[in-house]
Image 1: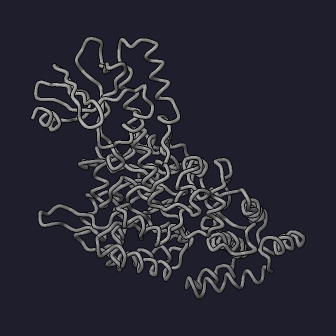
Image 2 (image 1 turned 90 degrees about the horizontal axis):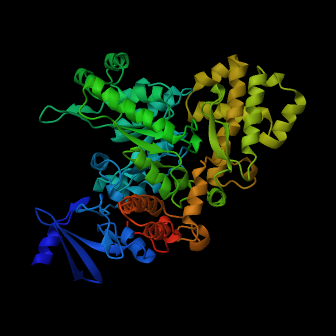
Image 3 (image 1 turned 90 degrees about the vertical axis):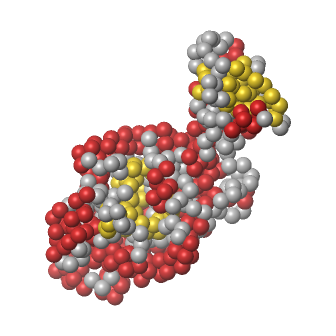
Length: 576
């Protein structure tokens, strides 16, 4: 009866002891530390026993008391405060409100990778495991986005499982951005991941405000949720504040929102969550996470106080999340959730080709570089890509140099143009233009853009060069034979840490003879992050006062051993 009573009083933190009992329960001793109100019952673990320490850390649901030579550490010499490692699992990381908001099991989402790399299959696999995945709708035509939504919604909506869809800013094609928003509203998409926005547009504001309503208590509810992915404080400002009044008034005048929604817009933020993107694959400012994240996290608190919001917008971390150490570091910085990207492209459910997956599996952290982006080519915006095994980065940079140096295609020297047609385009400029023109007229339904190109030679040159930049990512995704040297593979440096993390485990393609599962990849990253968090608790526990140098050296040696200090996925999949 005493044992059961003690177990019922188990807790986490520091137990204030007035009595110490050792009993036998199962395989070994259990330490019972009495308090004024009851007892805390934790198993004791000898920290010099490397194998048992690792086992205890992996037993996420159980707290334990670290001991050495049968003595527990206390916070101060002579006191009865006994340090212990609390129970903590991967689902305990991050902000619990994120889990509730999106109906997920972990404070994580798989970020969108454009052109369907974050495919419907990837989003469905994540959703069925209780993870939020974002469809890479950027760069896809509206009919392809709708086809993907057909698949996702039929698989996930009946069971109310989570998913999101990416809305990428399209500064040179406002009709595409508008069309996506109209599609999302018509199809009842409730979570949008907004990315690459340089300024707010009426389209993303419309999506947000059109989902505002009041519940039976009169409380404002935002049915259309927005996660803003960004990497600059000035962009965070627009996501953390209410929608701009002028844009709301314009939407009201156009009849796209109601008067009640326009009034409610003053009392909500543009975003439910902000994902701070650091050194990621694809579009990135290469900002160090430990610099930009605290700035935006503090800005969220400041703006919440300014407007009197009950709580600040949640702030998560993405870019460079490729190993448990990165996950642990992000949550230590104060992240409410984390975002994965590059690592998911290597997964079997992604929309990439096996050629790309194979290239990523061989890449290190230094095998990346910056190259011109197709969607913001004229502005000189670059994105991060894999440089190993492809000529795309150098060829794309050459196109931008020519774009800056000449006013039209006709001004480019004949010798240079001949080389472009032979090595880069592999067809004549006239053929490239004919294909580009057909795409804008018949796929994008944008005759005005073609007419503008006919009037402005610089616009025409941009559209021809962007043909290569756009095609090269498609060649890579499909694995088109003969175009391997032109593959554009979006990739961040974290691919190196990810490959090191999974080496020799069941997630390693060389071991499993297949590419990893997106669910297993993300669960293992989160599980590893929780393991390292518990290891940090253990290290703090073992800094007791009055410990001899010999004991300290023995303990540090055990905790710094590879078996304890490093989390590895092992050889068996996790239960999703």
